Figure 1 (cartoon, each protein chain N blue to C red):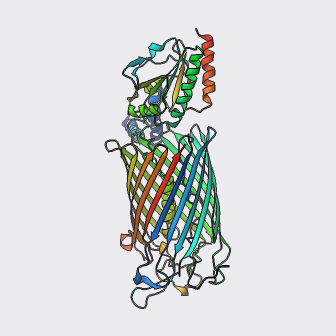
Figure 2: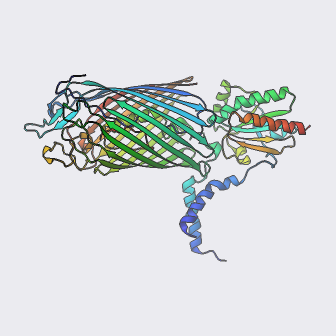
Figure 3: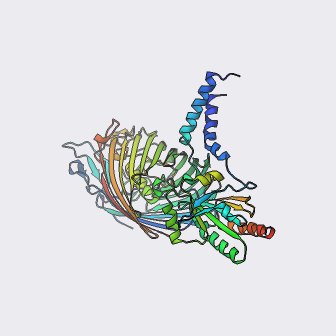
Amino acid sequence: MKSRSLLALTASAMALPGLVPAVKADTPPTDTSLSYRISSYEEDDLPREYLLAGSRERYDITIHQFQVVTPVGENYGLTFNTSYESMSGASPWYAVAPFDGEQSIVMSGATIHEERRDYNLGLRRYLNNGSVGVNVGASDENDYESWNGGIDMERHFNNDLTTLAGGFSYSSDDINPSDAALFNRVTDENKHTSSAFFSVSQIIDRNSLFQSSLNVTRHSGYLTDPYKLGDARPDSRTQIAWSNAYRRYLTNLDAALHLDARLYDDNFGINSLTLDVSWHQNVGDTWQVIPRIRYYSQSQAGFFTPVNDFSLGGVFNSSDYRLSAYGALSGGLQVQTTLDDFTVSFALERYVTDDSYSLFGGETSPAIVNFTRMSLGLGYRF
Amino acid sequence: MTISIKTIVYIALSAGFAMLVSGCQPVQAWERGVLAKPEMAIDPDPLETTLNNHIYFSKEASNGGHSATGGGCGCN
Amino acid sequence: MKTFQVMIMSAFLGGWLPLALGADAGDQAPGFDLPLLQHDEQAALSDYTGKILYVDFWASWCPPCLVSMPIMNDLRNKLQQQGIDFEVLAVNVDSDPEDGIDFLLDAPVDFVVLSDPAGGTPALYGVKGMPTSYLVDQQGNIVMKHEGFKRRDVDMIEARILALAGQGN
């Protein structure tokens, strides 16, 4: 049995949405493709002026992703995804009102190594006018286990110029927080999530297309973060997201412009806007350079307070920075090259948060996070 | 039979709407080469997109994109 | 009629009307005269009257098209060796013919490959999906129109060609 000092808390990321890429194509795959990606990202240390106790060093995370897409017979495509994630670092435990200066965040202690694995298998049947897919998956961490399943379908209309798609997925998660007895945490909780989406895609002309999607998700069960002292959240959450995507190819420049916008709302009181612009520039026949900018802004949850209010008793409260009002700006660059049947890619991204970037009023947590990410990818078709 | 102004307006609006929806002239099957380019896909790099969604989800309150992704949802 | 209903109908008609033209089984195969993709020569459909023809519209960006090319090449060579007067006329519709040429450099074929980047010929034939192929008999009539391509389709195509060869001269 592991022994841990009082401050050596495991603030694991809990189960995150599965690393399950959607594979969409009009026809079944004609060859097999293997893809691997290794990514490393580091969160900036918590600024000294906000730290009251604990470790300033936030998460360092390494993620390995692996995907196989292969035809099965003439009408099916099979996709398998798996990922392995290892993380270490400290995260905010609770926040108190500063008595001097701005020091209010109490972080968890010395870094602990955490691991997460996930798996997903999907089968897609291609028909004359569309396709149907089913998928099942599972994820596993030392304190969080989840299984999930989903079904989705798409149908083409109007000589394939218009596509309607929809799907449904369900997941059931079991939460067993570490060191439960030591820190008086809950043991053995459950949460389940149902999600449905509907989308319309339209080809506008030979160089451009547009897609609009609506996604509704409902979570029920234990939604509180057991690693955050005094955290108490409702036992149900409904979220709705409306996403729009535009793709346009510019012939003279041999580049494609991607514009994505998403509006989000939930019953915790959080609204958000996400804007994503990327430029896919072909260089010669085998290189592609993709700069990207993303802007994100969210409002705060109704029950968020920058400082924990331990007097509230049974009423909902959280000082989790992820429920506070803030904006984030990120810039990235990806470079890809193809050599015969191999593809190599490299990506760099810098993500910065600030309450001045926010569109919405509300309170910001001092613990909002910045990070830097690097990824290296390899692909092979045969 | 005389054609009323109303009918003309209907036809004009409909033609306009049809043009808007199919872009003046519909894109024929053999004209879809550009749309088939990988850089014109809604999601040209599924591993990158999934990675980004996973990372942003762990730091932000929002989730949901173009499809219902697999489960194992986060704690926010 | 309600405005909304008319608008929806027009939107669909706008997509379908141009495709009311075209050729199907039973029609005379529309004629064409196109340059070869890889050589400085012209070829016309009428040059091949009397042969059983497989007129195939393909492009480098269409995966099932690329699957069909070597398979149809093997079939064409096999049938010609058996003495059957059969030819494939593959019309490449890449708007940049270089893309079609690049594909054939990696996977050459022995049959006739033509180039139509402007797309007049597929429009004439009323092509609705890629690939689409037309099996034409010795008198120039379309006996079969085939959309899409799966590997096992080759058996069915071979059977139709042998049937025509049995009937014809």
